[in-house]
Image 1 (cartoon, each protein chain N blue to C red):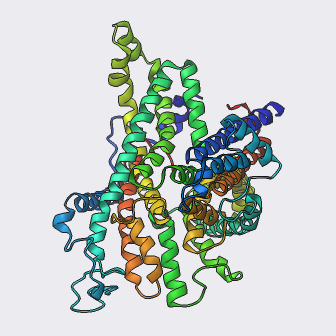
Image 2: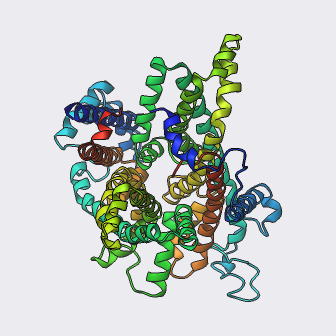
Image 3: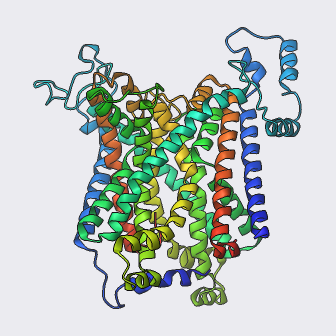
Length: 298
Length: 308
């Protein structure tokens, strides 16, 4: 089926041409909230040394498992300390670095490589297209968690391995998406015209084909950042992820489990940080989807 | 239809071949198991290594090893654990029940949440319900599943002492893990139930049913829900791979003695035959479920058979 046929019902739902589509107020509010949350996590990651009240590594065994300041007035630790007396707030602020690094780098790597493959596969077709799409099918039918377990078992845990696992498992989504967008415009008049003028294939792909795919890719990429932050936290929590000595939200939650009976704050706040950051990216991604490509659902 | 079944089955076979090949190859990259056996026990002699390599069969070419792995695997022999010396198949059989129970329990909770809410949302289309559904599914998508598990332990096991926090001690132990899994799954399922039901309720035959004067409940259940079920069931079947991810993580949170725990322990002990066995068994399960969903979908809906 061609994309034009798929798109028809969605088009008829849009307002008449000429009238600019304005987002309902609720949507703009959620976008604002999303941007605030994403902005806060970026600020924490970039300015961690300025924002963190203490050294995230400094342990003080006399202050171990101190409750948050409001639960014990006079306590200098705003959201309490962990089992070896490190300041939880400072560790959360520094932990934003790991989450954002994994989320952004993995999406950049898989997004760029998947987009390039999809462009070439869709534009040239032929055996290359066939091979790339069958590989994508294979990749997508390998359950993520199993792939991650095998790769980490072989290579050992670590930040770079997590990014590798995420990038390798996700290029296929971008390749498929970009390929389908490319197929739509491949035979369009303006592409034919460019070809007739002798424009090189590389330039046609870059200037005339790629811009058509950018909005769909940006939606997928934003939602993937959210998802990858969750996956990194889960893998680190399982001991398959980031080195335990680096402050990370998943690692903090893993450490907190032995103290769940006595120190609720230790397992509450790092999770809250993950949730708010992920929610921020999800809100922005949802807004982009509603704005640019309503066809991309869930 | 025969062609459709043949094509799908061949596709699944290729996927399984590729996955097993990848897993077997990757596990061989981890180094020589004969050397690993001596780790921390002094330097072994060359003869010792060769003897053990011969016993493990790791002195043969990779292709031969892979063929032997497949041939044994098909007969239910996945090798023996480096650590415990037990057959991997027996260790997996021991744990598979717990994993299956958690998966089914989580799915049951998800259905029990998603269907009533989805139907309600589709039949009461107003700003408030739509808003609440959006917020709930956004929360579900943003919640780390393991953190939801920890928070439920904190509230229901530590504070209120209603349920055991972890382990496998009778049916009460299943409540927290399957609820956690179910809530996460339900957050996407609600949206799907709502969307598909809205779609079917807009069909002409539903208008006809209403025009006949049938009661609204009957229209929604018999004409709407029944036809909305197919895409929802398909979705559930295809979510199996993702469900597995949740199961592995939550087994860890709740110390639930399933296959995920077995695999994670094997990773930390570098017990590669066990890692390989569990991954292959779970991958086979996921691919088979997906194949069954594809086939039953083709059976129920002739239109998909012409697709690629």
